Image (tube, rainbow, N blue to C red; front, side, top):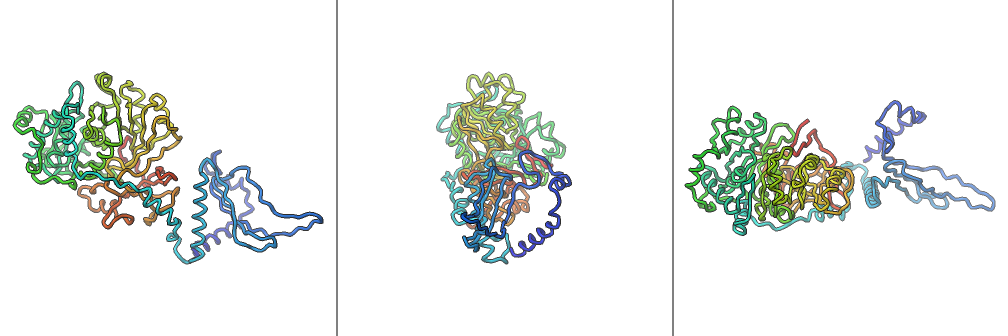
Length: 578
């Protein structure tokens, strides 16, 4: 601190040599971006006033200095300090006042800021030679609130796998509609039978725990059956969108080295060169149907599988570009998937009725639309591209209205052009991009009874790890909406580059800890070690994921997203490197 003080003093003294420079000339030379909403050169000012007191004596009058009020804030934040003196002119310490813009700060935030400034000064005076980065700005109560209170999310979740959750629902509602596509509809019992037969065929083809199965199919009933079957066999599915560029598909298949590729004839014909040696099963081949009919329709168990299926085994692998531009496979285990499914199934009312599956299967938005409804008795309606929906879908939705839809903010303009039947009546979940309150307000004007949720969560945290709920009738603030607080069994830490906690309201990088974390990146131990780091606030062996997202804590324990630490952006939920 002593060194910093000396540097600032030298800089200030050097600047005083130019104190006669007219302000207008300075602005002209620097040519900063102009705005009527702020000062052109700086928005925060700190001043120390120590004028020499000049006594005045006037016969019959008592003269004293009185502070003047401020007509308004000239800057976003202005702190003025000065000597506090008694009536004899003796120095009694330092006093000051803060003037701030009420459009940017509230009283509690400014009060906390002043308290941290005082702690900083007290610590610096006590040990002026300590590194400034080690000066703690948080008092014990504030630290406890950030580490413990806001992260008090522990919730008991059954230690089961995704197939067990689905099979339990089949037992509860065997005759209820589970899956709809076009004019085709399958009950829970029928869907389970198809998935069981395919699962037994997959086991026969060498699929089991810790083995990967690529699924390259267009959105259809066959796709959902395939995803369920891979899990029942004990394998982990790797969703491959047939619409992806050939180079990306080729990389994903080579990187995964799947035990089997589930596809259809049209998709197989378009696969890139170099994938011919991957064992494949054409699900639209009549020979496959004949083969499936020979397998039992009962649920496979560990006696049938090649090895026991455990919560620690992988459930799926989703590829994302990340910070290097090269796709990398994020391995999600059943324990993380189950934790998410149990939470989502209990928190969203709409998934118990009709949920739309409309997104690319290579985007984990599809995990919510597919697996969550099937664990609580809902119906998954598979639809084509929202920008060009099948005419029959609207007719089907008139008979059974959509109650749940998860999309990206980029889909909002599209939703306004679709028939009213596509608008969810219970919940609309939006995630993958920055969400502005104005856009939600405009959409909700025509759908006042729908709850809107702003979702946040990198793929590495199993679909979503936080949400900000806007219930019907709740005022929507303008600008970027908060992303909420941590979901059950999830913890958030906002840290600086030394992995120290930053105060509420200050910008820092978000680290996510808890049961939601992925196992890591497939075949990338170096990158896994760099992004999944030891959690200094957790139990021994605990990890936390470095998101690369800069956020800040709000006073209510929610987070606001500010920016990325790199050049990565998200478009329609997909990560893109600039």
